[in-house]
Image 1 (tube, rainbow, N blue to C red):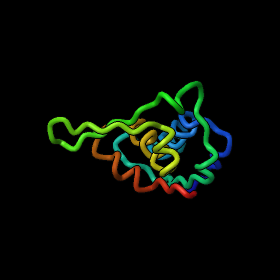
Image 2 (image 1 turned 135 degrees about the vertical axis):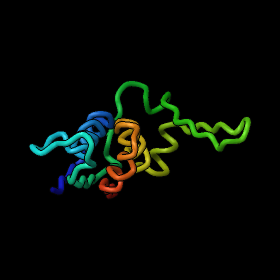
Image 3 (image 1 turned 60 degrees about the vertical axis):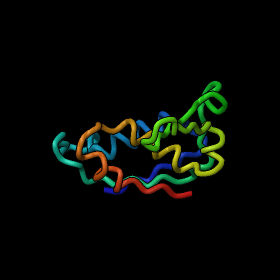
Length: 113
């Protein structure tokens, strides 16, 4: 089943939680934890999503290249200005269970601008 979510004026965490539940298939009657699920999620109007408090200035995303001293920081505001879809993708990525099904579930997430 395909779910279409409009992210206009919604909080990032709330939307990501709903998407993670849909991708796992927890909201369908035939939910099975060991299967990837069948639901597909399409998210629209990502540029109009919001965050609460001071997260827009204080939230930091870290990434490491694997070499010593190569830890990079990206502020939320900079990353959101560059690619708002990446911010939502990272939030959903970290909310899904850390197992072999995570890549399969994320393939069914479509983020439209």
